[in-house]
Length: 119
Length: 113
Image (cartoon, rainbow over the protein chains, first blue to last red):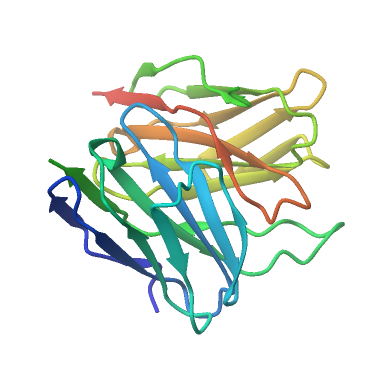
């Protein structure tokens, strides 16, 4: 296993269509994160999973967005009724579980991203 | 509210010289800081991190310094190489937030020959 993978790498869609992205984390990592990056900005947190449980969602994640990690391995991010403002790079990251207070936090490792363009 | 700030959008340095990239933060709860490097059309690549219990961490050509009282950290690259040309992001997190990262807006480093 060489790292986090994402599919597809690029997606062009028309406004109003639904799109789904997939992320495969590093195999021994039980935490998985989704971020979104727009031009000129740093990545912004969207949501994260610990195993199959989605434990936090950003207010950036509108009702049109849904994420799943059904078996605690790969994850999917779906955007329904896409809008032009959804055009961005969608990044997935994974990390081992944080071992808690007093221990070093775990580093997140990112995949190559999926670049979405909504026409 | 930009909790992590990189006030220099770009930096140009000659090959072999030192590159210093700066980052400021406002949230005093942050206790873990990371630097990522990003090439166009790729995801961020982890470079180096530092916990708030330290003030310096070194890994090869990369050193990160943390000044908690000033809420400031910096990344030093010595010597700079043309392959270091990329966008560098500072990120921060704190215990209890599942390590979710808050990123700065990035600094584009250009290392010239």
